[in-house]
Structure formats: C-alpha cells, structure tokens
Length: 359
Picture (cartoon, one colour):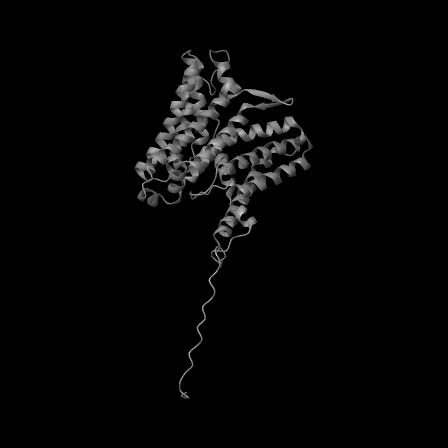
C-alpha cells in the first residue's frame, strides 16, 4: 500500500429506529403537565380554584350555600355574554358595543310592550330582531369597509349609548322605563329569563342553568362542527381561510349576530328581574365581557381559545365581586382586583403560548 494512499473512513449505518421510537428536539413528546398547560382553559381553571380557596379562607360567609348561589348568579350574568364575545374574539374581532347593546335590548322590549300596550312577548320578539340587527350592522360594516372592529363597534357603542338615553327620555319622559310587571305575558317571560328554583334549600337563579347550557353548546360548536373550524380559521389567518373556501363574510357577520343574541338574552333577564330598565346603564360592561374571555384564554389576535375558559373567567369575576363584599372589604378594590387578574392572565397565556411552541 502506498504511503500516500489515504484510508477511507469506515461507513456505518445506524440501526433503524423501532416504530414510534424516533424522537428529537422537535418530535419528542412533551410531558403531560406541559401538554395540559398548553390548553387555554387549564390555566384559568387553576386560577379560579386559587381564587375560590382564597375567599373560602378569608371570607367565611362564602362557605354558605346561599352565598355560593349568589356568586354563581353574578358569574352567570357575565358568563352568558362572555361566551359569544369569546367566539367573536377567536374569530379575530371584538365588540365594544356589547355592554350598551344589552340595555338597548331591554329598553326596546319594555317600551314596545308598555307604550303600545301589548303582550310583553311582542316586545321580547322585537328586541330580539333589534339585537340581531345591531350585530348584523356591526358585521356588515366590518366586512364591507375593512375597518378594524375597534372603530366600527366604538361607533356603535356611542350611537347606542346616545339612543338609549334620548329615546327613553322622549318616550317615557324619564331616564328609566315604566314598570311592566302587571302586563300580559310577564310571568311566563319571567319564568324563562329570570326565575329561580330551590336546590337543597338554596335558591338558584335560572341564568346559572342557561349559562352552562350555552357553554356546552358553544363547546360543541367549536370542537365538533364545520362552523367551529371556520371560526378558528378566520381568526388565525383570514386570507388563508378565504383561499381554502371558508365563507369569511358569513362567519364574521354571524359571530357579531351571536353577540347580539347574547345581548338580547341578558337584556331580557335584566328587564324581567327588575321590571324596569335604567337607560344609562351598560357602559363599561363590554370590558368585563372581553376581560372574562381574555382571562379564559382567548387571544386578542384571534385564532385561539375555547368556550370553557371564559366560563371559569366569568366565575373568577363573580367570585371576586361577591367575595370582596363577604370579606367586608372596601368594594372599591373590585376593579383593582380585576386589573391584576387580567394582567396575570395575559402573562400566563403568553408563557403558555411560548412553552407550547418552543422547539
């Protein structure tokens, strides 16, 4: 052998990996804890449990069944609206008019029924049409103009706020509607929207049941239907969704109309709970609904979230709102607690998102 001849390196063939055994930094299965934390609703569930335990310790009245029923009631009035708001956010938009739209719905039903001396169910149906019309207008303006939903719904918010006050004063001569409790159909409507029932001697509002029913339906829609896939698709990337045949215009408009439906339902609950409506209410509630959805894991950028997360987000709001009262603290701290919860949820969601996508 020549001294200048170089020896060829030995070629070895690595053994073929067994089926299902190949792992590297990209394909290795993540620990169960990380996979669970990647779910948007898990973090808020743990947060809700922590808030509940905190107030169970610091506010003994919370341990009473009637107190917990009040907490669930407060949570349900937020949660019913937070669900369609969450679906809209998953679809990449949000609605600043949701709070005053609730009052618009209640005012419409009340004044149609009382001023026209009609069965309250006529007012309820007209209010549903008006609420769906507000959602249709928001969605149509969004898709036709291409304006951000922030600007479109901010305009609707201001319009509805002014109309609520001006029309109520014009029609009733006051800032509140007249009492409709003695009108035909009131008791039947109240049974549907604002009744209560006893569970083990504890009075539970019907809105708690509706809240859970709507949450189950929203979860099924998101996870088991084509429409749910459309919501995630238009929220993730609208242009890509349109390119693969997703009806973007229909999806966007229908999501805004779902928010309108939620506003109608909550508005009917308020009307038949208190028999009258203050026309200046509702301002600021839209931020509560959005915050409950964000705390529940819905991203402001769209394309991610669930229906279960906002349920726990709304429960946290109701727990804090009532827990502060039961603890005997100054209720002025409520908004401060909500701000801390919101920032904490956003930071947790950011951490979860980075952890879930880390290579």
